[in-house]
Length: 80
Image 1 (cartoon, rainbow, N blue to C red):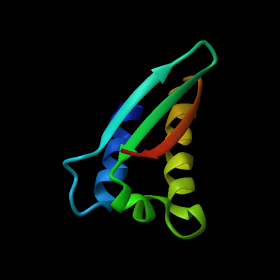
Image 2: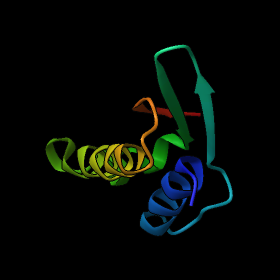
Image 3: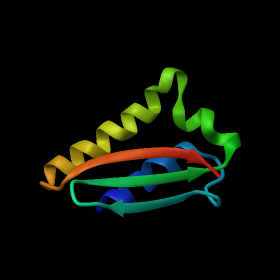
């Protein structure tokens, strides 16, 4: 499973309506950025209390990247 699909799976499993999310991968020389765009109504669900859920998503994606010996990965979560 690629990093984008993994991130998309994790985010979609949290949300009741998954039609309006977008997950893109942006690569540079030193790192990989995964951009997650979700509706503003669902930001609190994905971020979680104190950012716990967002940090857990980042940790899982970074572990998958490390396991595949890829570059450093960052996950940015923004609203549409």
